Length: 445
Ligand code: DSN
Image (cartoon, rainbow, N blue to C red; front, side, top):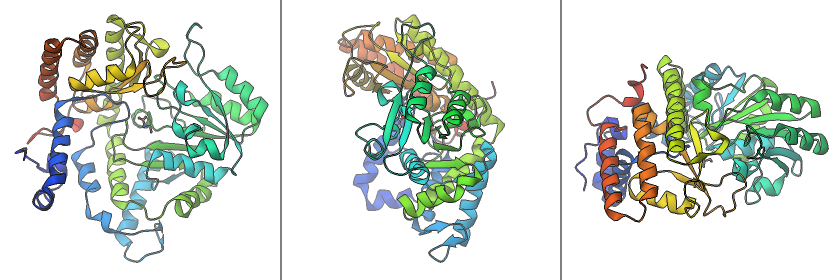
């Protein structure tokens, strides 16, 4: 059994001792996972390290409470404190993003997106969204997703790589699709797109064809809160997001909308799609929204972007090509083919994992390889920025990635890289024993 100090900084609750005593098997794996998060580099663009306050709320006794319905309109008794908490969460979300209405109950981003489709559309209606292999999300109409089966998706993508300033959202094609298919809803947003998404051209096209506009901001919502990314809240009818990516809250989803859609959205979430809300997670969302209101969070958001730019620049110097030739958000999409045509995303992800660099393989636009293999890697900087890393460390991380991939068959070199990763992680521990949590202390740049 690990002798790590599971104090409040790491686990959010002293009651973890009960877990150690009652279920050492599960605790053992929890302990291993904590070590993995602390001693390897986390570069998955959709992940982050939450604060001890968010952890405390997520692991709290609010998990015991049934609260079907909404504040002051519940189907069960005993909700007076839960009502206060959910109201605070909703109010903080609307204040933080300048929205008219918030629903903080969706269990995930996928649930949030489904709820919007259910609220605004009938099965079979036409939706425009980004293709999965161009950077879109499964719930943007991928054939394997229920969304692709229930609705008539017409999908747009990126401009060709060969075009000057290519691999950006192809608004000409989007407009052509909108004019031809007259969609009821246009979805903006992506999961693997390294550029800012300007809501204005989406709004103009939606207005021209009389479509609703939904902006899926799951990835950049923390950057939007930090005011280093354009906000879609004013222009879009509905904005969906997750709370655990750049926003650095608990795992979950949420929806912002104009007041005119509030009733329909709320009914679509409950009772349309979900039963009892996860009030411990809603409480943790409230805590995260408060954290995101601080000036420090603004500086954090700025540093995420600086770090992504530096990581990208370093990888370009090492011979990699970046999709769209760069980044202006928290992520980069690396095309591995220029660096080594034989190297695919699966092999790259696995060898990086073996030295303690965690990321995910990702299709690049027009990828000749299959989704389980791919020719790309997606790397994000939100988590390691929380742990306190800045430009210098990002340069080092870029060099370590390149060295790993160059020496992927050289066991002694890989061992040496693993030691360097460990050394770096020891200086940028997301949950340091006995020390202040770095996410609240390191952004006075
Ligand atoms: N799986 C998430 C991501 O990694 O972007 C999206 O749902």
